[in-house]
Length: 179
Image (cartoon, rainbow, N blue to C red; front, side, top):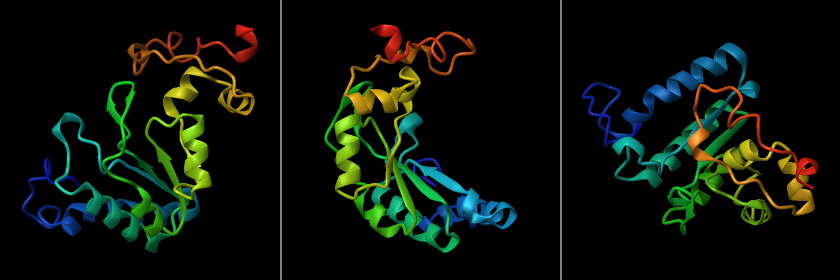
């Protein structure tokens, strides 16, 4: 979908509409096959990893949010550009709020949220739900920790996406193990 990597010249390249055509066709096919109540999508319009950015990520995210409405998806999950460098939070140069307002269904956000940030996002109606990927990985009892406002285990990024089934994915202690 992003213009910095999509150099196609056919109906799947060039304009924003053309670049978004393929993912929307996939969404339509999956919805037709299993029903919209079982389909969600995750989008990262602001991500620039591997030099795969877009010249106008806000327009890309907004176009997709608006276009997805016709399918009645279970949810749209967008990643907010809240991480400047690994582990460092930054102020958002962009916001998902226009996409949240444009999408008619359940809207999930992710992007380095902590407990307070997540609660604020929901309370301020910037999201219906907040996703805590890294924090959940390192804290298998994250809801309990959040409820108690207990300290969190720090995640170890070096163990992400490794083939070891034990180290990094199943070895983080539960709250009662740390007391």
